[in-house]
Image (cartoon, rainbow, N blue to C red):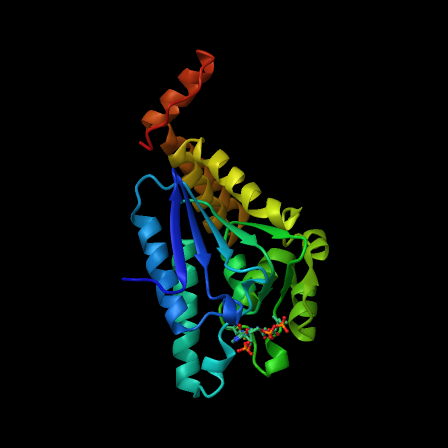
Length: 260
Ligand code: CAA
């Protein structure tokens, strides 16, 4: 499949997806969603990938939302199909075993913020603006925003952002726990890649299990979630990497992990 709007690059163990449709501020239409889905599949199939960074092409936007021109004349059935497609692609992104990092380099609105929320870690540039403005268009978020934003920042903040439709700037995004760090525009991608490369040096099976347990446990009662952790902790002692990691520590050398 040739991609017009999605660029996928690998720098050793770190994958970088750029949503590159700057003329429409990287808005997500059906084609962009399909190409994104395909790129996520390629990352999943890449045995040596250890982390994924997602960013927006051009100077202004991460992603300014789902494509309003495409949606404007949708029937209810078409809207349902489009929302289903968005949910499916973002669920696939979320289900990657490797950590994912949103490098939010500008507007992350509507489907754009929803995409960033489907990533594990979110870093923003000083000029980022993040929000769910859908009620201004007389609709609501359709790619998971009402649920993932609420889980990320709590009901009260999510209600404020969703009912007013007003975006927050980078500092506010950090203050409310949406963004981890605010960076100068030119420092954003290097910082995200640095975090990705750091993660890539850690035990890959352990990182994948940590991701799985955090994600699955978040929707469970604490007792059941702790049980997931206990089982995963024990299972990791059946891996070669656990033996190598602890041996390397005791021998005061760098571990050489094999993802096994
Ligand atoms: N869909 C389609 N095209 C979009 C777009 C979108 N979400 N956002 C921007 N564009 C297009 C504009 O139409 C414009 O195209 P033309 O040059 O052909 O006119 C181009 O990108 C540049 O945009 P602006 O001229 O508007 O740029 P600006 O700097 O003046 O404003 C902005 C930037 C504030 C982000 C503004 O573009 C904007 O408000 N965009 C829409 C944001 C939005 O409402 N997003 C939510 C969409 S609904 C959704 O996402 C539903 C869901 O949950 C699934």
